[in-house]
Image (cartoon, rainbow, N blue to C red):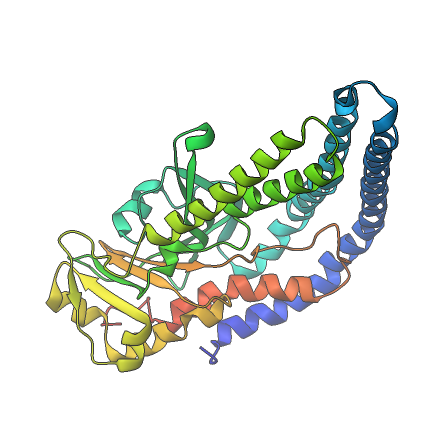
Amino acid sequence: MSKISSEIYKYKNEFYKLYNSSILPVFISMEKKRKKLQTRAFLIAALMFIIGSALCVFAMVNLQNVANPNDLEIFYILATLCYIAMILYPAMVNSDFIKEIKSKCMPSILNIFGNITWMCRNSLITNSDIRISNLFAEYNTRTDDDGFSGTYNGIKFDISETHLEHITGSGKNRRCINIFKGVIIKFKFNKNIGANTLITPKYNSLMMNKQPFNYCNYLYIASGIFFISAIINRENMLMPLFVIFTIFFAVMAFVGQKLSKNQFNDNYSPAKFEEIKLEDPEFNKKYKAYSTDQIEGRYLITPAFMERFKNLHKAFGTNTASCSFYDDTLMFAMPTNKNLFELGNLFKTLENVNNMENFFNEISAVYIISDYFKLNENSGL
């Protein structure tokens, strides 16, 4: 994928011109606001930390001076609320600032790429498309971030930064399994597909998609909080309760991770699909291919396509990828924990051109994929 089309080079030249003439001045003016908001967020976070710590210290110092230690419970509750505010307030300010940057700059930037529009938190790729693709396990909760829709070389495409989960039960019986978190790209291309053909990671990491900070980690954090509370309140009547909650959350997190990892396995094979045995040993080490029609599946997954597909993850810096041919559609899915399509945030200077270069590379990667897989041609891939 190192060979970039002349059209991409043209976009890049226009990108730098626009950045210097129109975007950078906006960023410079917003940099003052960013610093002001950042300072305020840090000060409020620091204030919440100081107040929370002071409440804890006050309660600990006066523990021996009260007849009933439970009378100090309100101080620990207030301290906990302060610590929560310390974390949430900067995150909320950052979220609002990111939205403001995008609303001011995104339309101008996308003009460089021709016919492409940006929509925030819109499901440009429908749930019907996702399910018809047969790439993902069953989910019932979906969260979308950035979405883009456009046309390149006569090929219509939609991009969706999506998080899919399967949540069951409630309260202590609640189970949350991460199905997918990353970017989904759907191309409508000039080929008629009769069968449904899939390429999936061999060990279905796309479905398992073990997140470094999923709900199990929240439970581990909760158990840690209660463990610290138990130490602080070791002379308090509530200590047994803290110990019980520590054990409960730790066990729930451990069991939850086991269930998430074991929910899907290497035996995944959708109904009515047959596995296609391919002659590329390197490809077979990492991926499996399935189709409802062996002949058409082999026609689509040519040696050239396999070679391109093995390098696909480089476009978005992911470790693996998945794809589905169905109807007149080719869908790619690439799991990643990286927050894509960002122009800047509250905690980094806006005057660093690297922020914009990353955005350019992520959008142009979609165009490169279209060129790379020759989606505007009527011949085999």
